[in-house]
Length: 161
Image (cartoon, rainbow, N blue to C red):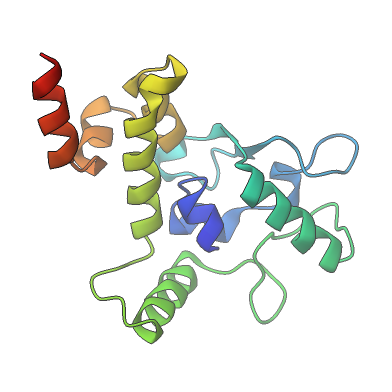
């Protein structure tokens, strides 16, 4: 769940609703991307997200440990079905509390994903529009609210001008 949040920027409802059909290719292997369906995405903002190598590796291990299912939830509840979004939120809260991390939530990984993506996008030749699409936001202004400024980067920028 942590990698789905920090490396794919998924919301709690998307983590809860993610199924194997969304991350498997036609050969029954973990794909190079996740197809987040409209049905699990906020406002029906489904999208295709390239899988970070670390996340892809973890999904492969999980897939093999679950005996290579063709369908069903990627993240299972204690009863074996899909978790609810509320259960994902509660899991993150309990985990962060146990680790002594104050102010963190199920959305912390998503915020980190969006901020890191925004900072790195210029190195790839992309734009904030690409980050917006990865985040599944309808408006760029929504994406901008997630991006935290970096004072050190601002000082370096001013020196370049």
